[in-house]
Length: 79
Image 1 (cartoon, rainbow, N blue to C red):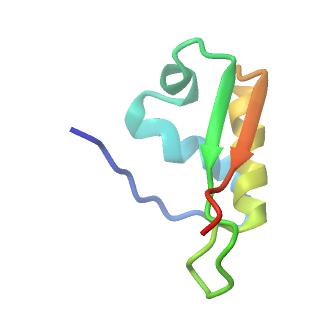
Image 2: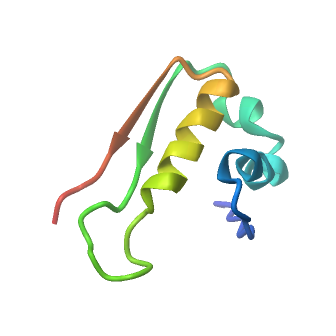
């Protein structure tokens, strides 16, 4: 069964990103030694709350690299 965690973040997304991964054992545990990661975002939609904000994507990528990822690929599925 999939697990979902909803977390409130403040203005320092890079710092707050670690809290997003806490319920799953932290970023290192989620990566399980993987050095390449694909992050699927929603970049095409222009309506509010229907796309992944660029500052969130940047914070996530920075966190994954800090946790051990060597390459992070950001992709979307264009509709």
